[in-house]
Amino acid sequence: LADRDGVIWLDGALVPWREARLHVLSHGLHYGGSVFEGERAYDGRVFKLHEHSARLVASAREMGYALPWSAAELDAATREVVAAAGLTDGYVRPVAWRGGDTLRLVAPDSRVHVAVAAWPWPRIFTDGPRGIRLHTARWRRPAPDTAPVRAKTAAQYALGSLAGQEAEAAGRDDALLLDHRGRLAEATGANLFLVLDGALHTPPPECVLDGITRRTVIALARDLDLTVVERHLAPAELERATEVFLTGTAYEVQPVTAVDAREYPLGEVGTALAEAYTRTVRGGTGDTSDTTGTGDTT
Ligand code: PMP
Image (cartoon, rainbow, N blue to C red):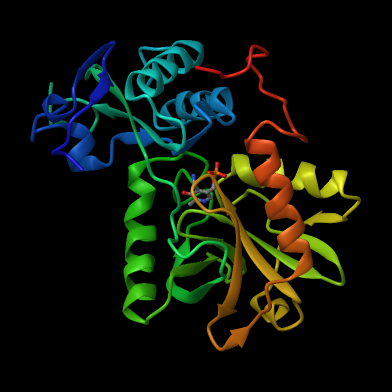
């Protein structure tokens, strides 16, 4: 990924892709002093751009630092990168990190850098809309008073990376993490939904990331007159679920066809929501509540 043509927005300017480097003695590299976002462009427009930029700013604040750019400035930087890349459909990765001014653990004055990269990346799981198979990880999402679970910080993703490796070693596509109390939490990069008696059930965003796709899908489900219940879910409820799916920027609405030994069909609720989501991200129908109010057309 580092060796390619193109440009990356770095600290206020577009630089050649290969030259967007950081120093090895960066706080962000040693102590998890970094926050990031995962965004997707559809037809040249980043879906929910402002919500992602605002979450990046909030994640940094949660981790004790202020970004040198506002959410609106990050929106503009992102549009600039997407336009420079000539990107229609692809992935966008904004990242902010504490720099190399000091390796003190407590580094309130270290410079905070920001980069935004964008590249074509049509699907996370390459086989189209088939379901994916999950493996319940032995790693658990920590309690909100054990880790800054609301922040999308690199510090959190060592856990997801370990859980994902374990799942792949078990021949599965992704991991399902439980929370610190053993309740259902989320996948490595997506929120979890179960269909129980025709209604959607999903864990509240306490120990899991407050996903932007999650919020979009909840709104779409209510538009389709589906009942949505946000509550804690026990693993035993997987036995009763008639469908399971994940939501995330990269995953979109991703059906799950197995959790450990339990199998699920590609069901009609997940299919209806996946179709509604596709229409929405492509700007067709449904949720158009972009908080900038100006749309994200680059
Ligand atoms: N949970 C985790 C751990 C994630 O990394 C992501 C991806 N950002 C999500 C959930 C889904 O969030 P979103 O819908 O905002 O992409």
